[in-house]
Length: 346
Image 1 (cartoon, one colour):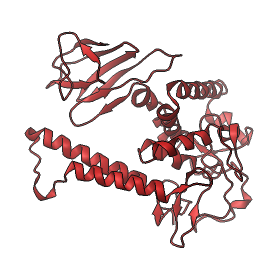
Image 2 (image 1 turned 60 degrees about the vertical axis):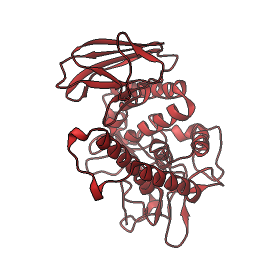
Image 3 (image 1 turned 135 degrees about the horizontal axis):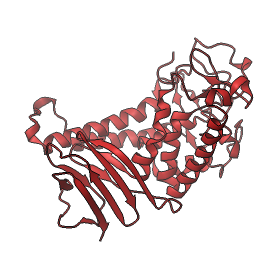
């Protein structure tokens, strides 16, 4: 039975896709418990229903350690989808699963490095259908899988061998939305210059698409090797119609390169900018009901608070940043009114 986004693939039993999200949810719960403890004015009761954040983090670390042991395929140098009830591990080069593991923080540093060596083409996995540059054959992101799969499907899918390689999103095709996780993994493991280069390649593809009239016209009648899925029609690429997750991809600017990360107490800003784009910004980021314009460079971060907040908002920057006339407290710099605030490196 299908059990997650990839509904034609019978994930289950010992399942990394679910384990990655469980690991992330456990850490999110730890963050919530810490925020509640730091803000007694919220009036959230603790008592028997509260969790100790340190216990949750210890548990998440234990889950991470076991997941890296259990799901890592030493032969292929990447994570398997799952180990079924018969003890069989399933590995068809699930790129989405491996970059997910980096996004959710469950991949060890060593394993994350090995994954990106494979996806970047620096390491060839023998037996794969797609290797090297061909992994990015569809240009906007990696193929969902790199090894042909005609045998491992949920009961609702039949005759997968009748569809050519790349003719289905789950078998050599691709989904635009999950390009975000690929860019995130590149940013964290290979650095901002690598992630920026990949992003500019995607933008070139996008320009070509719209110059030809949009996604449907660009891929019409399979003239570029496959068709689009969506609106009731199966296909090899998931971009429009029900693929709302395509909106994830631009978030790499705010969440990735600018390092915007809200928690229960402050909005963290930790830029990772490429040399080719030494200044980057976003407008109208809504935080605590207040729109912010944020512009970052190597030496400065400027935040325009465009309305008076109901109560002071807090911004947290990495150690070594200062704001004239203000010191960063444990919960960050407190901004009580609208205005333009410039943070500089010490």
